[in-house]
Image 1 (cartoon, rainbow, N blue to C red):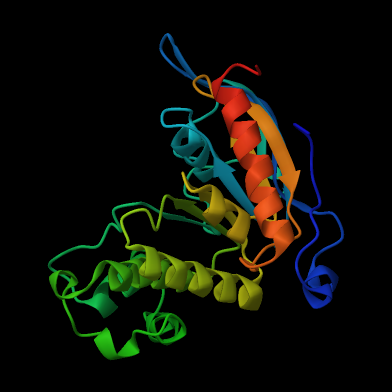
Image 2: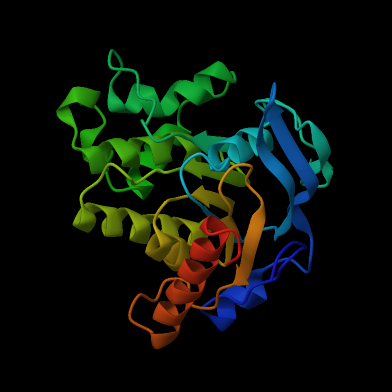
Length: 265
C-alpha cells in the first residue's frame, strides 16, 4: 500500500482511545525536492495523525534526511503541498523539534546548559531543563561536560533539550545509529515511554528495519533516489519485539525495501 493518510492501530486500547479523531499533524501531497538537477524526492504523499509515530526507512541517499528538513521548514519543497498542524510548513515553527545524528551538543557548555539552550534562545525560563533531565534519567549528570558522557548519555541530553521546549512534533534523524546494540534498544525503550506519556507526534528516520517496526505506528519505505513511496504500512506491533506479528512486519518492510531497490522486480 502506498500514499495517502494511514491511521495505524497501536499496541494498546488505552493508546488508541487517547488519540485525536483524525486531525493530521503532517499532510504531504505529492511533494518533491530537487538540488539543481538532482531530484532527491519525487511525488511523496502521506498523512500523520496527531500524536502518532512514523518511521521512514530507505537506502542511503534516498532523501530521508531531505524529507525531515522539509518538514522542519529548513528548506521549501520544489513541488507539492506540505502542511504541519493544518498550516503550510514554516521555518522555525516553535512546536517542531529536530534531533540530529551527531547530538549537536556544545562542548563548552554543561549538560544542563545544553538542555536549557533552546529555552534561553526563545527567551524562556530555563526551569524546564531540570524536569527534562529528570524525565530522561540523567538529572545527576547536569553539571558534567559533553566529553564526560557516553554516547547513550549524549543522546539523552539531545532528547531532553527537545523535550524542554514542549514540542508537539519531534523529528529524529538516525538518532541511535552510533550506539551499541544494547544501548540502542535502551534508547528505543526510552523514546517509546516518552511518547506514551506526551503523545508528541514523531517522525523517525532510520536504516534499521527492526527499529522502524518497534517505534513506528506507520512505516514508510522509500525507493533509491529519487525517493518515492514504495510502501506505507499500518503497524500494530509497536513496542513488542517478541510478537510473531512483529517479525512478520519486519519481513513485509524488508520485502518492500528490496523491491524498491530492485525497481519493483
